[in-house]
Length: 107
Ligand SMILES: [Zn+2]
Image (tube, rainbow, N blue to C red; front, side):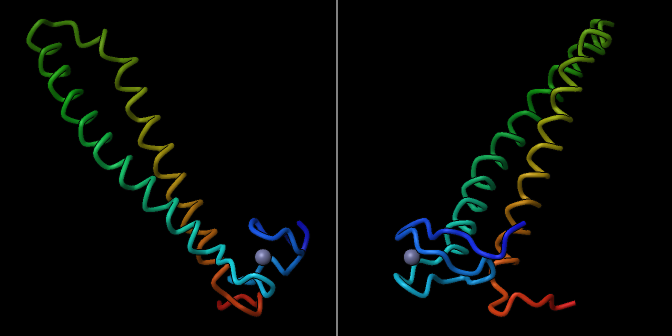
């Protein structure tokens, strides 16, 4: 892990902890926050839809006695949930990390 990172806008090296580039003022944390909200905005409706669809399919499977066929679909659903949760955690972690100006841990 290096202490410096190139700015996404002007390419100048500055500390990884800096929320704002000292040369051009480009804010890195705002981009990560934007990505986080974008992921949430996509993930929440998709997960709600998937939950509704799978609930319907599961009910149908129970009625027809073919619940075993829903196994892979349920596994996929859990995979999507875990993937979305991990993405949110990583994005949130990165956005809080770049918010500390001195780079010293708060805890
Ligand atoms: Zn810059």
